[in-house]
Length: 103
Image: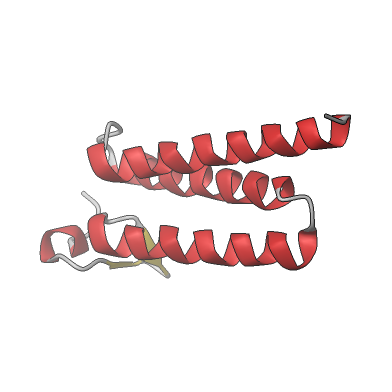
């Protein structure tokens, strides 16, 4: 296994760990403050998606496709299960209790 392959494998694993951390925050909400939870969710998701995309080895088309797919999944998950999809001060969520403004 070459050094480049080891780096790619490490980036793939790191990306998955960060994406799973954001999914865990969406599911279990271990950070209770909404704003801090939102920042944690999006920061871990963005870091995870970037690491995973770079870890595919080919930025075009593999990295771009992986980034687009994971971004869509993360955004859709944020809409369905959390109050973390906030654009221009408005919270987008599928359930009414998640649409309430931040306390």
